[in-house]
Length: 335
Image (cartoon, rainbow, N blue to C red; front, side, top):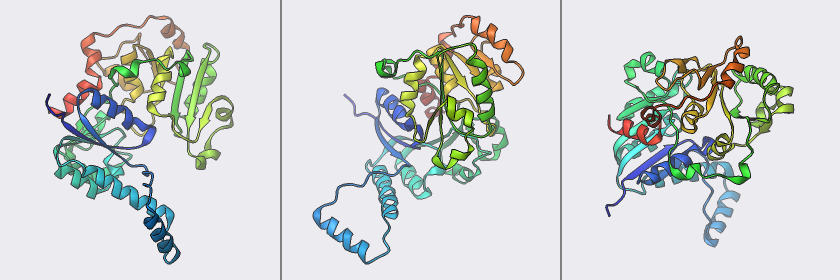
């Protein structure tokens, strides 16, 4: 049996999306090394190391947070260097990682690729790193034209297709008519509240979750705190998917800063569920069908009744498969 190809995944900690990507890569036969941008827990010290640390802290300005940061920096580099050669390195959100780390990873990679699932216009700091990569993909098609001098390419988000993901988690099986989760962003908080007021008059049960840091507490409307589940810590992406599997309708409220399609759009394609979205660009895509996607505006809520009554239109299998992670990975590695 041939040795599996080695894959380096460098990705944000956000919602632990990297864990789901890692599982899909393992399903595809890769040996995966993962590097994330969160703090790594310190390793246990020997008695000698503990004594040395005590005295170094007592006689210097050594800061515990600085030690954790330095340890995490070294840990990331050690993980990258743990393999002599990678068939593929995929860096998601390279602006969150040091250029030194990226250059070491590039030196050890046959293919050095990046995927940016946020808008470049809102994150211009990443542009200085585009040239490091063999190919740099963006999820917002408009960025290809806006930043054409950088040679970025379009790749949308995707749905995950490893089989274990479809196993039911009975503890999370609630059967909501609508389950919605998002992070707080001022550009969409008003429409989310408005839609909640509207839809709860028609459907039940529904669940809306909002995640935000404690420092944003004063920005959250009282209505949201009364009617939504509010969290200061993330809900892992895999847990979100378990909840979405048992909901009838998927919601997608886009942020104003980009026009890319969120993962919720592709969850709808995978799970064959209706999607209500505020992203008007879906109507131009090959996966669009008016029975399956409703583009919500501030004026057309009344038209939802007809949409909710129409049956889901099953997509041709070749279109559905096109948006799987397996197909997505082949697409970005074979260009």
